[in-house]
Length: 139
Image (cartoon, rainbow, N blue to C red):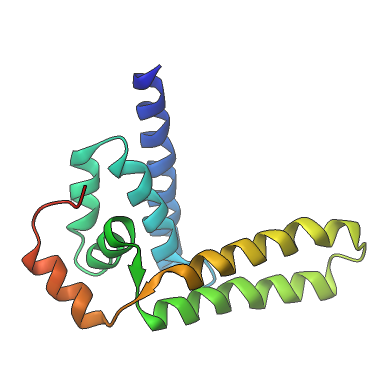
């Protein structure tokens, strides 16, 4: 069963990497968040794929900081919340008319907001320095 769960995590991680790559070219898709989820999948299934992911020039240090240390920059928090709230508010106002169908997205928004705000806030220099100076993965 352990092999199946590793395989499943690798498949899910790869799907999120593909979504992250698409997000580079599509403005409303959040690239970094997809790559962070891929990092979470890979750290629990494939050390090689995880190391490949965190070696990425622009996104690697951010992914490593989130996955290993549960910390992000203030700018990341702001942009994540904006990318969460703006489409959600537009959808709730213009598309969803029944209150029953607004409850699940509202609960998800609250949970995601709580998660994002619960992460430690650091500056970009800390993330970059840690990425360059720390070669071992935190257990």
